Length: 248
Length: 291
Ligand code: SF4
Ligand code: SF4
Image (cartoon, rainbow over all chains, first blue to last red; front, side):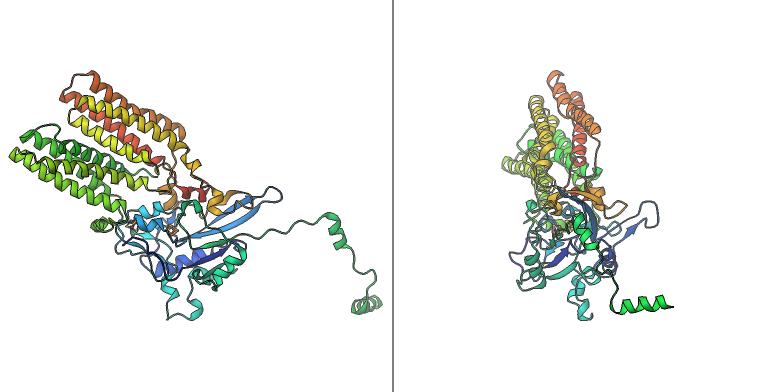
């Protein structure tokens, strides 16, 4: 049934640190790599080497420029994938029951065997987290690497989503938001995070940590103090070296 | 939205078919035998052509039957059920009228109501979308329903009723356009709420995720030129409402006049429906610095 579960036992999801992300797209590549070979149909590319390549991606990185009232503009990289919403509108619109939210961990999944490719769920999602695969005609979305996180054939460090495992700056964190002691809950509490598009009332699980305030430019006389020579006469080893070189 | 022909045909023709079945179900016009066969054939053909067209945009139409399973939560699924029940009920009623000159009026009445509910369910597939503020409004359902019964009224030769309904549809269409144009701005979603970076300052897209296009942009961030849309709006309201209403009021009521009125009405409705999809602005456009 595409009714949403009243309560999920856990709330698995991601924390994405916008302060740390450098927009390298490593997570995009890792996601495409893992998910094209595992859960469901491969993520196809159409006209990959031609003039108008398009392809299916479960994770895309936007870059924004934010201009504060005073000071320099900031560039912020913004990775975006399914937020595994608690009140997922994509699930309830699905006519076939292919889209569902799991009771055990809150992951929102598509059963591709049942999906007719009507595209309605992609329309219902405010975040653009679902893409129809052009080759297979079924809906693709982030699975939170459901085939990694419980996979006992993988070493324990690899039992996290591919994007989290690969991020070279550690900007992505995976965990259970229903547990107040989990790494993700602590991060959210410490840094304060906001739901994306709260007015859409989807109750997203994934959270974004806001960029930290930037260092302020110091005034020029402060710089001068910093640039003053620390010693007029060399002392110690350097003084000996100076003298020794002079003597040569 | 990318205005897919299959979806335009689906909503317009199934609307027309069920709109006609509504009138037939309440016993208008009072016909039997061959005449009844012809008009029922037209109603069923129109509804079924629409429903079949709707499967053309599916990625996997061979499993379309699965769409009947989620009636508890999904309007698309409900639409499927209502369509089937309406066609079956009206089929039984039609058999009585065509072959036995017997009008089982209770069955007809039930069929008429379910036909309208089917059109309502179709409209709710779009009107439920919070992500598309232009659609997310009562005018969507009101317009779908009024257009369906207007078309049905033309086909059942009720010139006066049809003209009145067409004018009502015209008013609803203008209200839908005028209020729809500002609804995105009023819905509260901006690039700042989408990114939650508004606390720092004014946000603009610096770089999209990819240099090329993608499914979302093609499907949901379709844009029509304003000038283009304005012109098309004028044409569609003239053809959909004004011209057929005038034809029906001024010219003598006969089959030929009816056909002309129907064809202009259909042309205008197709244009209006094209605009309905083409002008739909999805909030996901905000992430792409567009809408
Ligand atoms: S982000 Fe979109 S696809 Fe994911 S659960 Fe929320 S509404 Fe559904
Ligand atoms: S595209 Fe597939 S998963 Fe999405 S609503 Fe349609 S049937 Fe459900």
